[in-house]
Every structure is written in C-alpha cells, then in structure tokens.
Image 1: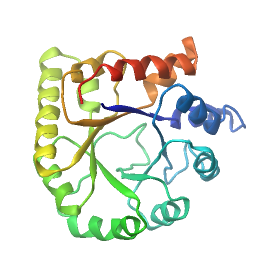
Image 2 (image 1 turned 135 degrees about the horizontal axis):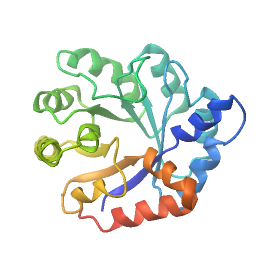
Image 3 (image 1 turned 90 degrees about the horizontal axis):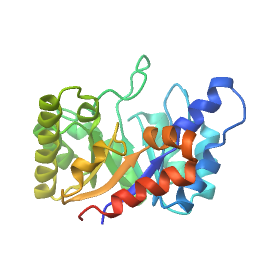
Image 4 (image 1 turned 180 degrees about the vertical axis):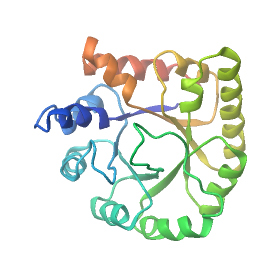
Length: 241
C-alpha cells in the first residue's frame, strides 16, 4: 500500500516571514507522524529561505518514522546529509529566483557525476531518490545513476488549467511510472498534489510514497494539522499498491 510522507517546509516559511521562533517545524513533524505520516520531508535550500540547519537537526533527533532530506547536489549539502544521516536523500534542482521547485532535476549527461556524488551516501546506507520529470530519458539516466527511487514531479499535472492539458500530463506520469517499474526503480510522486487531484492515482499500481506539503498545511489552517494529515492519509489508504 502506498504511504504518505509530509513536507514541513511551509511551517518554516510561515515562521521565517517574521524571523521569529514559531511555528516550530519539529513540532509539526511530530504531529504529522502521530496523525499517520510515515515519513517527514525537509528541503534545506542553499539560501535557507525556510528550513534552517537547526530545524533539520531537531527533526533528525525527534523523528520517529523516516527523514527524507531534499537537497541540491552540492558539496555543502552532501556533508550535511552525511552528518545527519537521513533515511533518504532526494536530489532536487534549485534556482534562487524561483518561488518553489519548477521542474525536475536534469540527470541526462550527468550520470557519472551524480553517481559519484551519491556514492558516499550509499556507502553509509542512505537511500537515494532523484526528483525528475516524467521524461523517458531522465528515467533512464536515473537508472544508470543507481538511485533506488525516483520522485516524479507532478507539478505540471497539478498546475494544468485545461482538461486536455491535464490529461496529457497525467498520461506522461503514468507512462513514467510504468517505465521506472520495468527498470526496477521505486516510484514516489510529489509536488502540487492536493485532496482532489491525487484521486487520479487511486487505481495506479507501483507508487511507493506520496510527498505532500503545501496542500496539507493550507488545509491545516482551517481544520488543524492533525485532521489535515489524517484526511490525506485516509485517502491514500484506499489506493492500490
């Protein structure tokens, strides 16, 4: 059965808006776990716009499930990952001017580089994932790199305004899932998924995890974090394995 992993970055975004001490991402992570999340996601950006080093350290110390550490493929982040020892690292692209991640990591032509980058993490027993678009060439590259997981970027599907455009993007994702499974890769989905558009994947086999943050935190404003996580976890429990 696929499972829910909750991204707590937006808790830090709210805190950093006032550069204060609340709300506390580590508390949100604990509450999400109690409500049914089986993993906590943090993205420590190079510009530290939301999650801070201290947040990662606290969540690592208090996490009762799995810590998924999203990061750019830089020497600084590699060192931090080796130090905090998360269960999984996920390599993502970063641009300073973007509001949020706009697309998948380009792995094509970087296979040797990224394989070498991940080697010390793999040697320590840390699993790896690559956040990529549902593009056949990127999936092939991910397989060559030796990542255990890919996380298919669902943002283009989630952002599509027209039904035809949405169906085209959904078809690409479904094709990508099948291709990845045939190669022996495990598949996660994430970015822009909410309580409605996630239902398109209800009967799609081969998805390990759903990585969701923004829509859960947005719903939590109205119903509370416990209820928001439980509602999403319950939806995912009805999905096929």
